[in-house]
Image 1 (cartoon, rainbow, N blue to C red):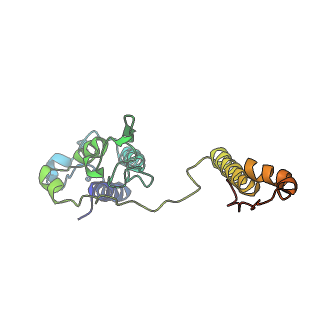
Image 2 (cartoon, rainbow, N blue to C red; image 1 turned 180 degrees about the horizontal axis):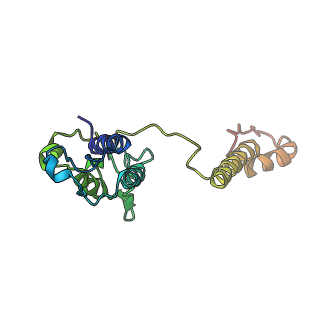
Length: 194
C-alpha cells in the first residue's frame, strides 16, 4: 500500500480522470452510477459545478500535497517528518514526526473518502526515510561564501602560527652567539614551540 501522501495522490488522479471524461450523468466527485435513470432526466445531479470545478479542486489539492511531503533536509534524522508542518521550539523538533500524521494531509484524505480502516492499511514512512535532494543548494550563496572565507582565514592563521618561531626560539637565536662563549653551554633543542 502507498503511504498517506501516495493514497491521496491516487484519489486526486482518479477524480481528475473522471473530470476529463465527464458525462451529463456522471459527476467526477460523486458516484452517480447508482442513481435511478428517472431521477436523472432534467435534474442537476449535484452542486459540484462541473468538470472545471473538479479540475480546479484537483489542482488545489496537488498544491497542498506539494507542500506537505517528506522533508529531505530534516535536522532530526530519525524523523520521517512533514516538510509543510515544519519544526518548532528551540531545538527545531518536527511538528509532525511522521508524514502520515500530518493534519493537513489527514483532512485532505478524509475529504477524498479516507476511512480509519483504509488509514490502518497504509504504509507509514520509515524513520530516516527521505527523498533525494534536488535543485540548487539550500544554503544561500552569501552564507556559503562567508563560511568559506572564515574557513580559509582560520586555516591561514594556523599555517602562519605553525611557521612562526616561538618567543623562546627567537630569544635563543638572538642570544646564541653570546651563549656559546660561556664555558659548559649546551644548546637546548627546540621542539618548534617551547
